[in-house]
Amino acid sequence: MKISEEMLQKAFDEINEENIRTIRDAYNKIQRWVIADFPKRSAHRYPNKKAVIFRDLEFNYKQLDELANAFANSLIE
Image (cartoon, rainbow, N blue to C red):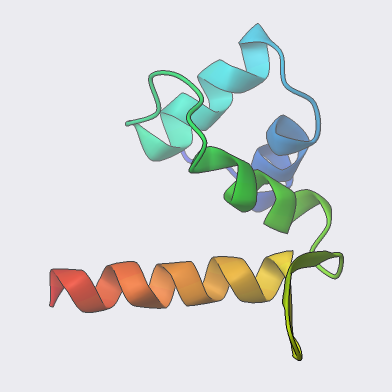
């Protein structure tokens, strides 16, 4: 079953048993919530909200998610 972006967004918006199953089906690897899942969820819910502020650097959740994905992909290559 193909899960649409809208269904996935709804699943990230409200955590309950049904939505956890939807997310598991989409990613087929989430067995439980771990700390690493929260930035991804926050990127969907609050993409423009500040996630990291360090000295003169600021990243919102969307940027943080994109940077984390780029870093993870570079480790795979």
